[in-house]
Amino acid sequence: MRQSIFNVEVSFLPCTYCDDSEIETISLAKALISDQWREKVEALRAESDPDKRRKIKEALPCFTPSGTFTHVSNTGLIAHSGFISVDIDFKPESGINTNLAGFDLKSAIAAVPQVAYCGHSCSGLGYVLIMPIADPAKHRDYFRALEYHFRRAGLEIDRACKDITRKRFVSCDADPYINTAARPWSIVLPERNYTPREILGHDLTAGETAEKVESVIKICEQNKWDITSYYPDWVRILLALASTFGESGREYAHRISAMHPEYNAGQTDKKYTSALRSKRNSVGIGTFFYIARAEIGKHDFDGLQL
View 1: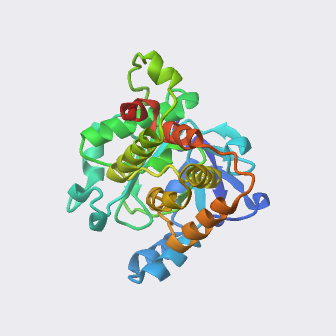
View 2: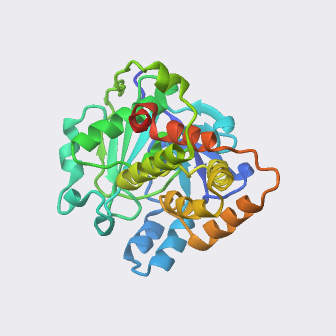
View 3: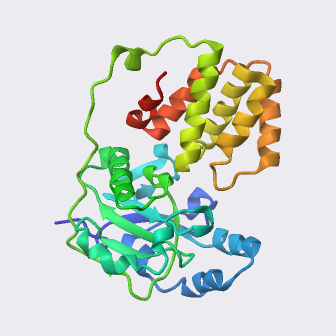
């Protein structure tokens, strides 16, 4: 039987940071199209104060479109749902997907046979797409291909969706697009041959190191890519910058941390100062490049080789 949003299960959380004992299992369809959260979602959409909007949003229930979990982490995965979530935000003030102004994506999405669901996000401005995938083991590979093809179509998708653990808040849409016969997405980006220098790397001088770090940060800024979304990686990035550049790395720390939607300058300053004071810091700049390669994708990252 072909997978549809009506015959797969996902994990449901009454709030983002609930205890593991509160995690429930519900159908993906219920998470997407149930009307029971409409009042809360409409309250969010009606609120104009940013701080109040944030508090309302954080109190909404959420679910994990790509699977069921005992704990929402890679180690807590019970089973992949066979679906990937694609978020298309509309943030004209930040220059994100400005071409969505006045455009109804749902009316055009039928041209993409791999889309099983399309509806408005809880903000009421952006969209969420749910797509079946051919092989759950290739979740990240599929995401990179989706990112590439949507970019060619003039749309930027949220990079956080590359993670199987991605949570999304419940929403409501009076007229969602639903296709129970959606074809699984099976496209990946083509492989390329890597030179020995790309595979093995080489020792960098201090100048080369600074230049390469600057290149990584610039490409993240240009594409609004966040490589700090996983907290332990963020800490290791700051440790790597501190051990390599000392106090002069603080600017790098802020620039790369600023890609995170919840970036806080004071918190970043405090964490970087702690990294500078760490007496047993053995994290080198190679860790920074390793995390960047994993998050940006090898194809994109290797374009930065010196």
